[in-house]
Length: 141
Figure (cartoon, rainbow, N blue to C red):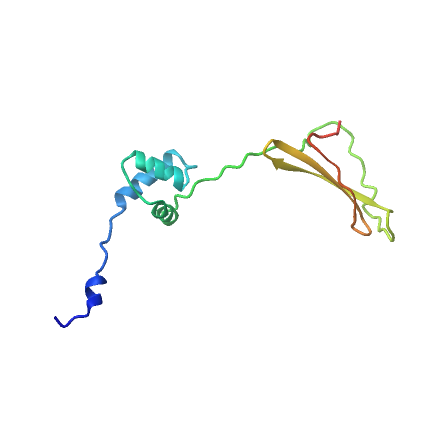
């Protein structure tokens, strides 16, 4: 024939029109904006589309259909109170040796069962941890 064998095997692939699929994905995404590619695949399968999850991920990324992530807001500080506010006595103090000034901070670490309160006490001169108590509930008040 006079043509290379690879010409037969390297035939161009058919271009698949994904407009109906993308329109369905947009409809699902508008109704359920937190759906990722797994839930999207299940919803598409329920509507009669059998599509690979990698194609769904690619189409969601290309058409900006990524799920909207909602984070739960937890109020950890109540600044609206009538309690006295104490002055910062260590504001202008510069320590020149260990154990002259300790500083402390408390943080709330989210775990599966709720929060764990972790307090850290540092020596301001050496920056070494003097104490680090933790508790499952706040010990204040």
